[in-house]
Amino acid sequence: MRMAENVLFALARLMYRSEVAHSDQMKTALASPRAYAQYRASRAQVVLEGARASGIDVTGRVVVDLGCNDGAITPAYLDAGASRVFGVDVDSEAIRRAGRHSIEDRLVFLESSVDRLPLDDQVADIVICYDVFEHVARPDAILRECYRVLRPGGQMLIGTWGWYHPYAPHLWSTMPVPWAHVFVSERTLLRTCRRVYHSPWYRPTMHDFDADGNRLADKFTEERISTDYLNKYLIRDFEQVFARSQFHTTVRLQPFGSRFARWTKPLLRVPFAREFVTSYMWATLTRPGSDAISSVSGAAV
Image (tube, rainbow, N blue to C red; front, top):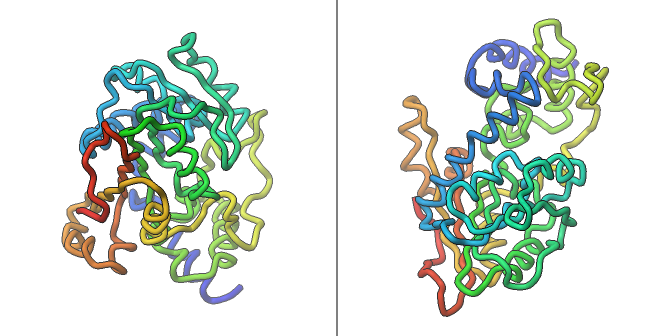
C-alpha cells in the first residue's frame, strides 16, 4: 500500500472515536432511518433561523422546499406560517415517502428533473434549498428555474458549503480526518475509506445496510467522487453562478463554532483562505421587481 494511504488510515483510526467529524448527536442520528428522520426534522429550526438572519419570513408565503428528499423538514414551513408549501426532489422514491406528509393542496410533493422544476411560472414567494446545492449538477439551469417560478420580489435561500470545507466529500463516518480530500488524491481517499469500512473497529451506520437490513458487502470501490453526486464547487464558484443569474445576491459566511477555531474568523474576509475556514454559507437571492427586497450583490460576514 502507498505511504499516503497508510498515513491517512492511521489518522482515521486515531480520530475515529472523536467528535471532530461527527458529534455524538449525529452518530446517534445515523444509527437508524427513524433516528435520522427525527434529526433532520429538528434541523428545521436551523433553516428558519438562517432565513430570519437573511431577512426572509415565510409567514403567509408560498414556499418551495427544493431538494426536500423525504420531506422531514418540509412541514415545518407550514408550521412556521407559510400559506402553501411545495416539496420538490429528483429522487422519486424519496418523493413517494414524503407523500405521507401531504395535506391536500397546502403541502404537495413533486418529482423534478435535474434542470426543470414541475411548477408554473411565478407561483412561489420563497425557495429554500438547504444542504442541497452542493449536490446540484447544473446550478445555472436550476437558478433559471427558480427565477422562473418566483414572483417579482421573491427570494431564494441557499444553505451549502464549498469543496474546501474540511468534510465536503460527505464521508464523515469512514473519514474523520479534516481536509483529507485536499491533501490526497480521491483515489487514495476512497481506498482508505474502503479499508476503514472493512476494519473490525468500524461501526456501521444506517447507510451501510440495504433495504432488507443486510450490511452492504463492499463500498467505496470507485476511483473518483462523481460530480453527479457532488459538484465540487468552491465558494467562489457558487458566487460566479449567482453573478451569472438574474438575481440580486447577498452571501453570508459562517465561522466554525468551536472555541479552538475562533482565531479563523478574520480569515473569512480573505478570498482564498475563506474556502478552508467557512463552516457554512447562506446565500440570499432576490428576483428584482416592484416588491423586491433591497439586496446588495457581494459577500458579507
